[in-house]
Image (cartoon, rainbow, N blue to C red; front, side, top):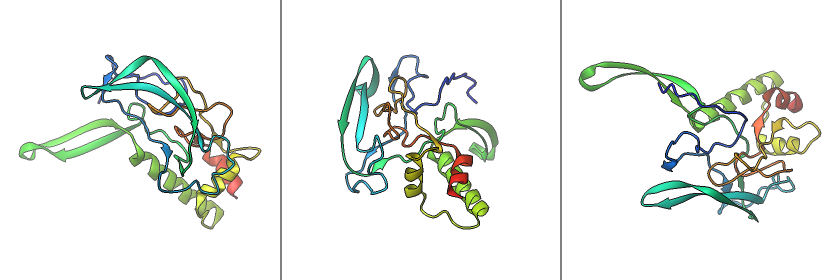
Length: 201
């Protein structure tokens, strides 16, 4: 298990610019953006930040490697199509989840080790599990959550924490957008599930 301590001083979009000493190579980050095939759904329309974006020209690709620009440029713009993601959870493999692995290696030798891992393989099942708990508490299915989440996000007491900072909050392309509810790096932000449950009831 890698014992390197990573200091995370605030919730932010996942763009790994902090673990590479040389600041070059293959850098990881979350996805986001606009669908070219699906139109902006009605439940996203009118939500501040939807169909607008801010990006950072953070990386330069040369000779098979990415290099972090020391003085990156920021851009703003508009686009259309289904905006993704909807919400965010901790998917960063540097601050993510300890996983115990046991398997038989070469010659049938048993191998057991702890590793740090992350990604949607952890976050998506968490969202599904919490939805199942909410279904149980409400005693019926909450159904297709997206329209309800976007409606609640623009309400009086939104159950989300938007991650809107532009600086030090990017997924290697998209950044937060100040004074908005939504951005293409983190969607509506992180979810306060207890608050979401109470409002869905």
